[in-house]
Image (cartoon, rainbow, N blue to C red):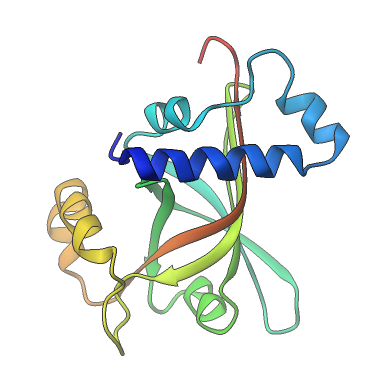
Length: 167
């Protein structure tokens, strides 16, 4: 867990607002028992790398989904891809993104938001990049030294997270 108390409070507000504004159907699934996750429990569960389903939108408005390494840092998803990937082109033109983590019936985290480039090739780094880069360096080692990697931080406007009670 790398979140500050302020980041945890912000994440908790997002989780509460997202779930309370969701459909009755979703609330009946996530809110059943103690399945809905608190910010503190969520950040405790989301350590290390997780494989995410990342959805972007083509120029024709068609959805595209792909997998990617995801890291939950400071209450936000961070993921990377090649600068030559279709995903990178989509996000450059249309930064709206949906990200899902699904681990069977044990854990689900669904996020809608905007993907912000952390290390753009043609401009200044995102303000969060200096805090995130050491973590990614430690995790990926020399792989991070490639020039063709683009990393993104998802600024969520909606996030719902649930886990099986024993998770």
